[in-house]
Length: 353
Image (tube, rainbow, N blue to C red; front, side, top):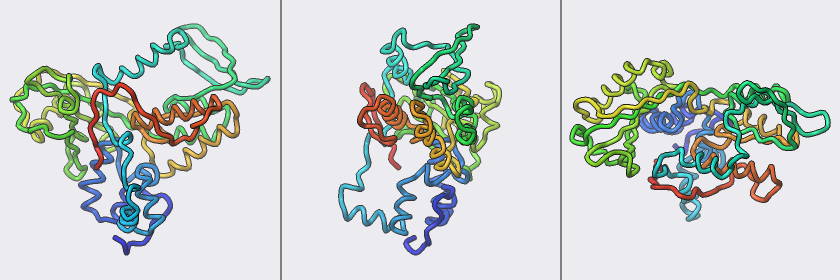
């Protein structure tokens, strides 16, 4: 690996790993990892956006192994920030966080109100056209934070920059289905002694992987039972995420039998369809983010944040949101890639590969 030449500034995850480490590491480490993190395809994802530290090491040292050895010689710089390497949840589930935020906002939050358009106002600031039920209204604001998903932000940014709107629209969100299965623990041969299993694309499985939810978090299943969460579709097999419920659950149950030794029928099933799943940091993603970030300089008072900027994890989204709030209020700590902590986490489990 130390003798492999540097690659271009931006290339796919697959190209980078194949060039530096070979096909086997791509197929059995990076492919399932990208599938588990992003429901993505490493052949279409930007190495610079998905694994920026590895790409930076290559560009700086000419070799990943040489760069890691140099960092180890320097000592503490090889430590990972644990807040960015944890999977966490709350006792009553992840909706605890938005519910708590909504409770703090009280009547200032207007759920069910759709922002249909944002445009510069003639006298300064911004004009928002909003729909609340069947009522249309116009609001004026001195500052606006667009925290919508990239595909929705594209529509809202069209009045400011076609380049920025196109950049947001160019971020793909392949469909994803999430299937939860509850089993009597005695019906599962697998020890469920880790966070879950991820499947490589070369094995042609119908699931991206299973999360062992009741192993990771207490209170997710009654005593003597286990809860499994399967992820289906994404960029690898988008058509599977749109199967009818009965076909989808049958497919997942079959995978549970083969991969985890599940016997009999589950005692619990739940299916959630996401027609637009996780944002995919594809090739050219750093340029898209730069085009979107430039709007803040071009239009003072307009701010952008979301899971398509600095990462899709909850911690990354909190960091990005906090930094955006600081910029909007003119407070310290306004960097896009700051760090923050999440209070009240029920349980944490390291997922560092």
